Amino acid sequence: MRFKTVTFVILAVIISLFTLNTSAFAEQIGVIDLNKILQNYTKSQNARADMKIKQAELQKFVENARKSVQAGKTTAEKKKLEDKYNAELKQKVAAVNAGQTQKVQEIQTNIYSAIKSAADQKQISTVLTKESVIMGGQDFTDEVLKVLNAQPVK
Image (tube, rainbow, N blue to C red):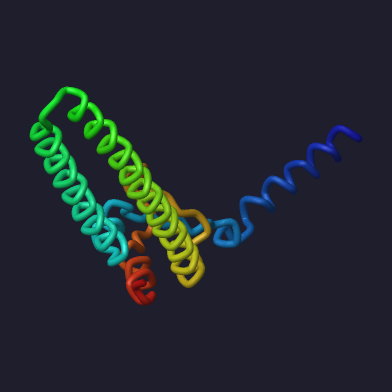
């Protein structure tokens, strides 16, 4: 008799779980296209353009340094110039890398904040990248871009 009561209670619980409104347990899944965001986010575009300018400046510095070293009259003079330009180049590259790292971190923080903001607005609880989803999910990439590009550009 006790076995039948326990079995009945377990069956009742299982049936009640299946008959509950499943939308209460439904989770909204959103997907975003990070490549599209990075390509269309104004600050990301500016950072890429700035990096191209910095790379061109470094290339020009290297070319001018090479010409200057080649114009040296003695081996000792050439070595001294080469050491001088290598030290300058090292400092310039470090400064460019530090600036880019800071920009990347700022862009990444902004993107994550915009994703959170757009997901909250659409009541999306889980966000995945579009590349990792074969099927399903609500794409809200454009909403994230609207949030990002509405921010003032520094």
